[in-house]
Image (cartoon, rainbow over the protein chains, first blue to last red):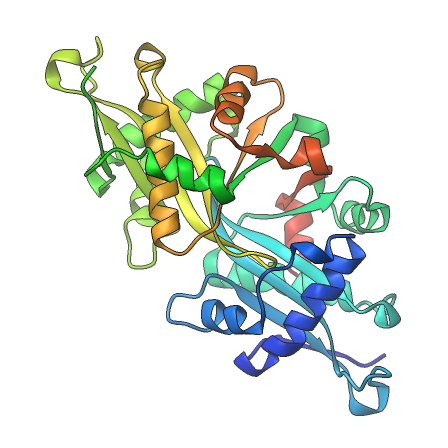
Length: 174
Length: 169
C-alpha cells in the first residue's frame, strides 16, 4: 500500500487527537486522555514546541470507512541523558488497525530516528511499552530495542495531581 | 545546616560533571558516562538548551574536605504526555553522601516541581533502579506513584547500531 510520512501541521491536530484516543482505547485507558486537539495545537505549534509529530497519509482511494486518510502518527520530543547526551523520546507510535502490516509503523519509527539524528544528533531513542503488550514489545525488540526495566531494573515514577502540588508547595522560597 | 538552592549556570558544569560521575558510581554504572563537562556547557547553556539545572550550595565553613561547596544538583527538561499535556522530567537528583538527611534532596526536587507547575506541567516524571531501596522509599514517602510496578510500564531503548539501522532513510 502506498503511504507518505510527513511532518504534522497544525491542521492535523484533530486527526492526531482522534488517534491518541484510539491508542488509549487499545491500551485500555480511554478515561486517562484529558487533552484535546486545542492543547496539541498550542503546545506543538508554538515558538518553543513541547513535541514534534509525524503523520502517515494514504491516497484518497484507500481511505478508511469513515473517510480518514491520515492513518498513523508518531509523537516525540527531545530529552537528555547525563550519561549519553542528546536523546529522542517516542511518546506515541500508532497505526489504525485496518492499516497495520503495511510497514507504516516501521516507516514512522524510522523517520523519527532519522529526523532526531539529523536535527539533534541523538544517540538514543527511548520509549515505554506496557508489559502485557506483546505485539508492540515484539515489534520494538525486532528493531533492536532493549528492555531496560527487564535488564537493568529501571522503574518509571510519577508525581501528579495533589501529590505534585504538595511537593511544589514545599520548595524553598527564593 | 544552612544551604541554598539556585538555578545552575555555565560555571557549574565542572561540579555537575563531577557529581554526575558520583551518581553513576552510586548506581553502579560509572562506565556508562560518556558526557563531559564541555558537553554539558554546550548542551545546557546554549540558545536552545537540552536541559536546565538547579544547584544546592553550602557556605564556605561547611565545604567538603576537597573544598567543594556545590554539593547537590537536579537536572530536568520539559516533556509531553499525549494524554495529559505538558510534563517535566527530572533526569538526575543527587546530594553528596555527607550532606544527606538534611532536606537538600527534597528541596531540589520541590524546586523542580514548582518550576514545572509554573510552566503549566501537570506531571513530574523520572526513573529509579528497582534495587535502590533508599531512593525509592524517599520518593514514595513524598507521594509519587511507581508506574512500572503498578501498571507494568517498561522503559525501552534503541542505541548504537540498532539506532543507526533504524535511521537509514
